[in-house]
Image 1 (cartoon, one colour):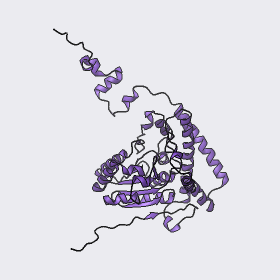
Image 2 (spheres, rainbow, N blue to C red):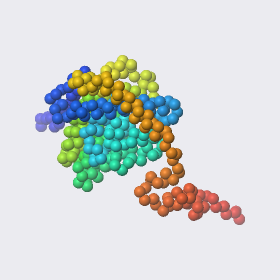
Image 3 (tube, one colour):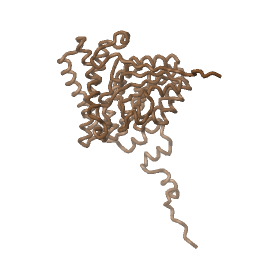
Image 4 (spheres, rainbow, N blue to C red):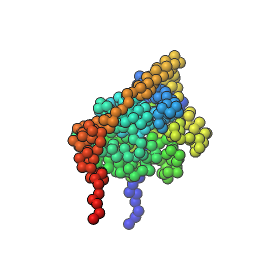
Length: 374
């Protein structure tokens, strides 16, 4: 029998707004309005200020380790705008602050999380999002499960989950991708390929030319985009969400971006990254790119920039003040946020502040004296 090709594929790369602030008007048609561009620029600027204050809180010993979002924010704001607030779900990693804020999460919750205060993980009911996920890759399984539940209920909700390139080397990633594809669950798998899995470069942790091609194994639509381009991040997410809403199943997006800061405040990227690489990506900063575009269109001025920066400082100062001055938690909080309706045994523990097994039967705790030897 002659040989034949049984499978072939191409993966597109999409860029709409380049590093110089030049827009591809054809691809941009029907995407972001001028007002939306200004709005997203404001969101990124505020999050940059949030990063700065969070960094200072950590360095001054008032907060634990913190991962800055600097350089990657175009992904969060573009995708966040493409999703329906209060309707769709966001299942984040830990560099999507802007999207979480845009979808209603009070900003001080993020600071509380990194301060070790569990109240930062008590997501308000009106916010369809899960807490920040620190374990790499595990939350993608949650996203697939939530999406499948939405499908079973006949809801037109979409679940977007965010993760880094390093997470695609985890087994949980492949399990989530396979499950979502087989069940045609409405998930947008959004990979922020920032080139580094902590200190491991992308080309060392995988041998594939792109991250996007991993989705081909699961029969899933996939695209690679410029992750520092708000037009591309918005359009790719909007198109993927639209497909999912129509019953078209999951989509994989590889957003090529870069973290301009260290992995976290516990990291020193100078030990493994070349400064020339960082400098090259600095020129691709989404904040700089958007401002060039707005100035070229007459949408932005130095006066507006000054006002925005001053407003961002006021907002974030108030957020930090709220987090730092929050009343101390009480032991009962541990029980109150565990179940919607507290089981009887845990209710007894909360009221007595002791394990009920010891109070009811000391033998369970080894407290009853042993029988004497004959």
